Image (cartoon, rainbow, N blue to C red; front, side):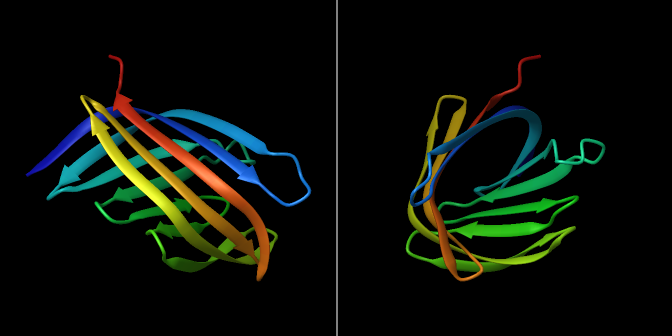
Length: 144
C-alpha cells in the first residue's frame, strides 16, 4: 500500500575537517513523503547557489541503508549503510569531483509522527580526507 503525506523537513549537518573550525548548517523545507512496502521516499527542493534553479532532492529510507540524490545545478548521489563505502562523482558546473563516503554510524528512529535519521560518515574528496560529518534528518507532519 502506498501512502502520501506532506511533511516538514529539518536537516542539521556538521562537518569537522582537520585544522578547521566545525561547520554547521540547518535547512528547513517542506516536502512529500511516500511509503511503499516498508520503504519511505522523501522528495523536496532546496535553494541552490543559483537561486533561480532549486536543487531537487530524493531520499530513499530503508531499514539498513539510505540513498540520497540531488539534481539541479550540481548532481550527486550518496548512499549510507554502516560499514560500507560509496563512491560517486559530484558533477558541478566547474567540473567533476570524485567523492567517497564511509558510513560509521546510522540510526533510523520513529516516534509518534516523527521520523529521525542520524548518520555519521567520513567524506573523502579526490582521494583526500575532507571531513568527518554528521547529519540529522528530522521529518514531521506538515502544519496545515
